[in-house]
Amino acid sequence: MVRPGPLSRPSKRNRAGVDEPDLTSCHSPSPSTQVKDERSPSPTQKRLVTSGTKRFTPIPNDCLPSCTDYKQNRSKWVERCVKELEALNLVPERKLFRDDGLVIDWRSHVPVRSDTLKPDPQDLAAIIMLTHRSNAQWHQSATTSTQECPTVSPPSSGDTPNPESPSKKILPAPPRPSSRRRNNPSQLIPVDAPPSGPGSSSPCPTKPRLSRELERESHSPSRDRVSSASDRVPLLPDISSQHSQTGLPSRPASRACEQSIAPDPPSAAEEEMSEMTLDYLRRYVQTYESDRASLASAYASNASFAYRVHHIVQNISERSSSVWAASPNCFSSGSKRTRLDIATTLLTPPSLHVNAQSSSVAQMEYDMFYLGAKLGMFLVCRVVDSTKTVVHNFILQRKEADVEDAVIEGVWPLMATAHQILVFQT
Image 1: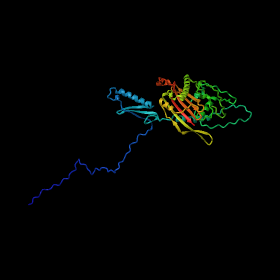
Image 2: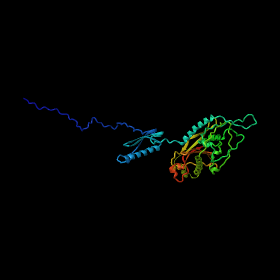
Image 3: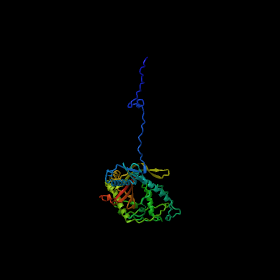
Image 4: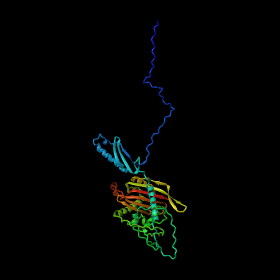
């Protein structure tokens, strides 16, 4: 009897070790495989906003809870942050303390940049030109709506009246900013009344006519139109000793008669400010032509200054009416905010107030308007030369209006808080 041998057990399949990697399921990318390259998110675009949130970080050490007086220190820190926003003309609304800093919600009355929280730097020259253009449109519509003024003509031998000469078509001029100063005869520079002739008798007042005529010529750089000497300031010698008698040119009968409104009598403060303004203007022009570096004392510590040159091109249309247009090629110094920057910029322009033909200081037309004790005096003056027209726009304030400037020696009694020089080059 054959004894059966031992049964062979089936061989166990070797299980893969836990630590052994599965090479079949993990494939390394081949060098030819392309991986998608994601672009990084673009930075936030700078845009104009009227509200937002400002975060102040890091938190000062004395404002941490580890400090004993951290609550009082936090209140002081919040006040400093609020003043920083108010200095940018922003209105703080809500304040929130977080672990990473202080967050303040703010709003603004004008659109500001989201990164700098400041409005766009606007070109003062462009703003003034747009204002003059809108005022000129209103001025033209108001002139056409006025009634004709009856003019008494001298007796003539013929029955037919003299034919009127056709008037030139002129662009509307920007109105001069000081209606009070223009309608009220200056008490600082007395000018005798022009003699009346037989051909100049008219029931219309002559002062508003003179004002409107000067307004019409103030926008054009040409010198072919007549200007009265009552608004010109001869700067050398002393203007207080200059008296002139200039006969007014006769006005065509077709021009509209304007009604003048009696202005309020100027106050003592306004008269004193007017005298100081004329002294400032005379001194500024003389110092500009002799020692410009010392003009830093003529500006306030926070003054704003701009200088711009426009090249004027004359275009003649089919109807032979001359049109003055500004060339796109212009120079601008930008806005300057410190005395040093202003004095440095003033060294760049050429001589602006000397007549090229006579080599003497030219006469200057001026106009001023008192804005009150808080703002000061608004002064506009103009020098017309054969090749250029220079316009100054000043905002003048007393030295005592600023606490810091009041104690500085050498600062002028009147300071320019804002000044713009416009040069129209022909």
